[in-house]
Image (cartoon, rainbow, N blue to C red; front, side, top):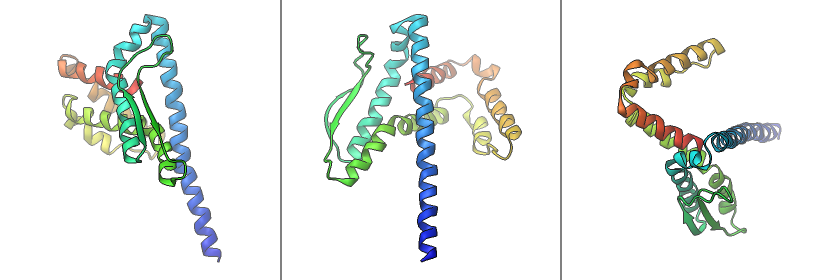
Length: 187
């Protein structure tokens, strides 16, 4: 009986750690997004938000839509890009679900987190296939050390130097990668 209690407690701790991590990261990213949009709005107005929303919002909304489909929610409407300055809305996915279905209830969490998951996947693909010379940067990213703060910061510095190299600054492909990545990340 002690073994079962230990398994239940350990499972509870692990689930709390994993889900807590997602909630904390989600909370931080939501605050950063809100702050970024406020800075855009106050510095260059609504058009500053639209400048990145044109690409970032459809990626964001597609994440919601795909996870609605995965979790068998009924999608009522999809608006990949329909900015409304009065409300601040940029797009939407309206959906309903069966409240008696545990699977669909669990899906609500993933549908809410979908832009983080889908956006991260999009950023990884952009990094791999659009960033010039990504094959030079990828080994450092794959071997990112978390042993000590010093080794982590050293690796991050090396990654930054590789991405923002002088050679990349002369590449149109780099600027396209930078714009699309920024647009996805802020939305």
